[in-house]
Amino acid sequence: MLGETTRDRKAERREATRREILDVAWAVAREHGLAQLTLREVADRVGMRAPSLYTHFASKNAIYDAMFGAAWEECEQVAAQAQQQALSDTPRARLRAMTRTFFEFSVADLARYQLMNQRTIPGFTPSEEAFAPSVRTVRSAVDLLGAAGVTDRDDVEILFAMIAGLVDQQLANDPGGDTRRRLLDRAVEMWADGVGLSPDSAVSGPEPH
Image (cartoon, rainbow, N blue to C red; front, side, top):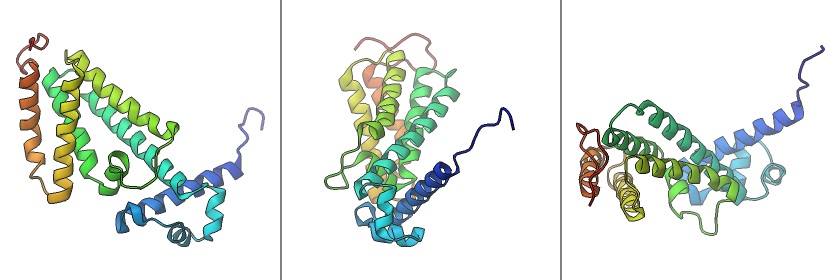
């Protein structure tokens, strides 16, 4: 009919197959570890011959690349939602929301966190396109800190390293537990004190340090 958009059913089927391949790849990675991902097992689970995967992904690293990009896109969306909900809060409250959101997203999925933040796969480097959402996510966090008056790059790097350390310790030593989760707010408050971020009751910017 006039005015209707013509559907590209072939493209839709191709995209659906790509999503299925990625879903299966994540399932294999979560069961056996990222480094144990094989095209043969992914193909078997999808119901195709391994060479047929090459019509959708040029290599195993191309699958990792798509997984990496999708993971960071999801993280970007979750972080943006959390920041939007915390807009009316104090700078420290927004900081706590930001760090809790990243911590919970990270510890919820070991394989995803390893691909996003650790060099787990020898020889794999994400493409510029796949890396872009991670850059945007970090830039958004840096902008949030800058709006609170924290502009020293070293201060920001210390915060990021501290959160990553707590995530790593949680996943390595207490997966499914809360030993490091319980330390998160305390660690953030110590950092905030160190950089002179105003207390929750204050309305002015951070004190000089």
